[in-house]
Length: 303
Image (cartoon, rainbow, N blue to C red; front, top):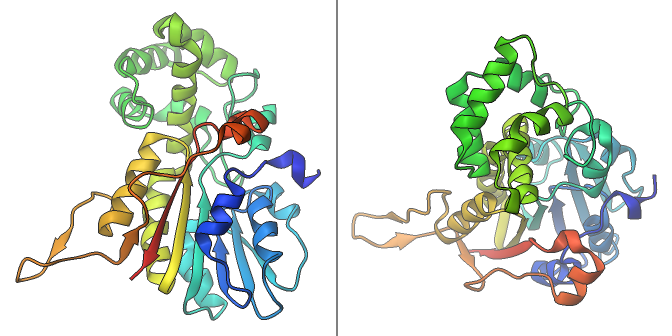
């Protein structure tokens, strides 16, 4: 598989500029995907520089580049600290994460990430993990399903959706495919916003199956601890849940957005967020790569 077909990196020039790459620097790309960001970073490194890239998807790892300045880590980025310790890295000059789902995942019907194909409801980023989306729909309580759709998909009709799924499985018709899920839930969505609301259903399930927000919180805390003073943290998000967590963390050092105060009432945060608004794609990039439309890049520097 050609890397170009796997994923087109969003906000590539903006991300490289934000990281302020040094030829002899040490960097982490926490989401290798198709390798677009990683390749561009390595091109700017000397033989003294190094990039460590993470991905939990076996296909992404199989397509990893071969370069002496590069190390591929087959793991979820929530284990950043452990692997950097393993490689003897005490501090890095920059950390990047592009939290978008690779084009390949959406376009590969058998992965079950998209409602454009009728396929098994899988949605596992790491196909060696045990619980698929279909397993989740078959085992979660009605209340937990409703919470999943409401918290991760921000769907007002979450309770109706959860009830329909549970009634179907109790009647001996568990939801196992994307087509079955669409047939069941389509009557509950607003016809004028059908595509958007169905996308939010799939987003909610994907986040739950992969524990994405918990992993993001752990990653942010570890990335901050790993950065050297003056090091850059660059995160690209694609929906409001992720963006809110990242913005809060960059401003305060925690995902709740609460500034810690010392005995004298002075606040301290480990990072300084650069700019009050995120960097977004240009019209030209959106025309070239429509899937980048919702991308938002936020950048912070380690104090």
